[in-house]
Image (tube, rainbow, N blue to C red; front, side):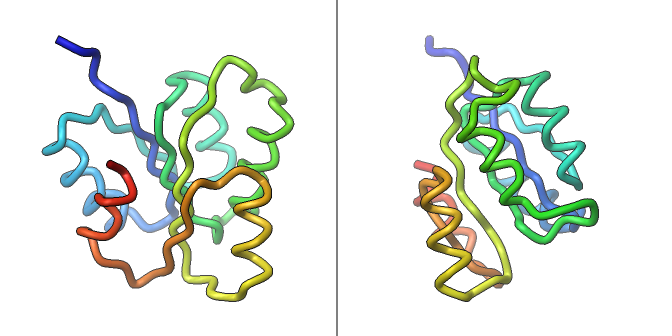
Length: 121
C-alpha cells in the first residue's frame, strides 16, 4: 500500500478551502489548510506537502511570495511540491510570473472542480 499524499490549500476564503478539501479527502489525500502567506509558509515547513493549491490574493501578501520562496529554496530545500495556482487574476503577466516561478498549472476562479481534480491527477 502506498503512502497517502499530502496537499496544502492556501486560500483566504474558508468556503473554497472546504470545497476543495472535501474533494481531495475523497480522493485519499491528507489535506492541510492556510488562509495567509504566513500560514502557508508555516504549513509548508511543518507538512512538506506533495501538492499546493495556491491563491494569489491573500490578506498578508501575494501568493507569488510563496512561489518565490519555493523557487529560491529558502527554508523549503527539503521539498518540491507540485503547485496549482487558483486565482481570480486573469492577466497574462501574472500567469507568466507564476509559471516562471515554478507553478505547474494556473486556473482562474470561478473554477470547475472537475477541471481542478484533473490538474491534481
